[in-house]
Amino acid sequence: MSETAAAYRVLARKYRPAAFADLIGQEALVRILTNAIRAGRIAHAFMLTGVRGVGKTTTARILARALNCLGPDGSRDGPAEEPCGVCEACTAIAADRHVDVIEMDAASHTGVDDVREIIEAARYRPVSARFKVYIVDEVHMLSRQAFNALLKTLEEPPGHVKFVFATTEIRKVPVTVLSRCQRFDLRRVPVEMLEAHFAGVVAQEGAEIEPEALARIARAADGSVRDGLSMLDQAIAEADGGRIVADAVNEMLGLADRLDIYDLFEALMRGEPAAALTRFDEMYRAGADPGLVLQDMAELVHRLTRASVVPAEADDAALPEAERVRGRRLAGALSLPALTRVWQLVLKGIQEVNAAPSAKPAFEMVLLRIAYAAGLPTPAEAIAELRSGAPAAAAPQARARPAPSAGPPPPTEEDMADAVAAEPAPEAPAPPAAAETVELADFDAVAALFEERREPRLHSHLVRDAHLVSFEPGRIALRLGERAPSDFTAEVARRLTRWTGAPWTVSAVEEGGGATLAEQHEDARRDLFERARQHPLAQRTLEIFPDAAIADIRPIQPGEALAEPPEEQDDER
Image 1 (tube, rainbow, N blue to C red):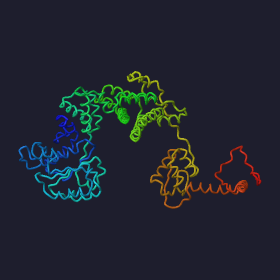
Image 2 (cartoon, one colour; image 1 turned 90 degrees about the horizontal axis):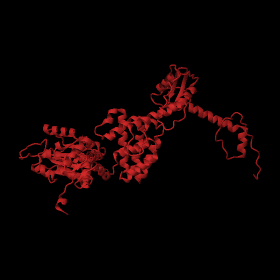
Image 3 (cartoon, rainbow, N blue to C red; image 1 turned 45 degrees about the horizontal axis):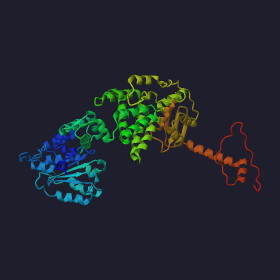
């Protein structure tokens, strides 16, 4: 192995921040820590949390250097807002060889014995530093006993000890530990900031990269600086001294071309499953990963939904011109209910693809589901059709679909406008008719009205949890069971008033009331079965078939003859 290869440092380590000013995307954290150091209000324990690669461990090391910095001339007698990076303390901590700055990986030191060592060592003053700093990475991996052992020392540590914890799973850290720490949530770094940072790294490395390739890497990093630098390192190696292009980045990361995502999405919204599967097969052969394609589709649906609500979102300058044009077109052609439905299907699909033993078949099933769901009416359209009495509309993907596209070139705006204009506009719901006269003679009629008006929850409580105390038109008194909601009487009165056009008062009382309607119906059913068993026809039938039982009773329909009793069975039969 050559000396150059052996000494190579990956970009994620080479460009690791060495001072607070180098941290990107964490302005609030930097401001609070520098102000605290300047004012001398330095906490004894810090909890740094956030996703992977946003700078938790890096921030801990910078904080350790700031606390122990001696200054360029070695004369500093207190913590520095920005570590100098050249004194003995700064260089030793940066090289991970300072005896008073101890880093521990909680993933491999999870037990109470490991914490006991920290507690014992914390009693002794630092050897050469101003503070003894314990950096515990992935602290959520400590056992429950280890956390309990740490509590007392963490609450009242010696003045020369500082604890800095880092974790990606803040919910797994006991609240008793969190309450003893100053918590800092490190945010995902915005895409625009990542692009600017990566562009500077590329320039320092003497490489060249297409803007679209840089944007792809920044988006794929998902807010993680370390992940993005690792991808950039790989892309520079792949280019082998040449220019880094978007197609190479797509192939390297298993990403699909952004316009391919639009083509696939449009085929789905047109309700063309065959075209969608063909498009995906092409993307898959080019190296697209099904899971990443679904994530890109979720991002597209989210962006279109925002653009449909806030039209200015469609003109985001961070997007290429081709994406802005197609995004504006789709956002104008798709309804919000259609986008919401696709969003739910895509989210469910991401879970299924991640859990499936083979991602491609699972992804194709998701595509088929979305394509066929595109032809279903939205709830509002279905209700309008039911009210109008019209037959179910064929393809209400109608106003929610773009013009057909025979290939990768996107449809023109004129084609999209013609396609949308050609679709029949959904029928507007008929204006509400004048309130009909509804007469309620008894409590049974009230319950029946709620069933007729499709209020299953209130109807169930009326039947099962309401004991009628008194009834007269416009006024009902009930004794309610424990399962009835607190606003039950107000809801019933409000609906009765609206449906009948007359004021109704429904009150709840503490005592009185007979059986509920459900109990009355059950009593009537038992009585009906008993009378049926006493019927001569039933008694004769049960004598001949001793193991038989009356399963149900139904009224005789008009014109239906009553069956005669069965004939005597001889012994042979």
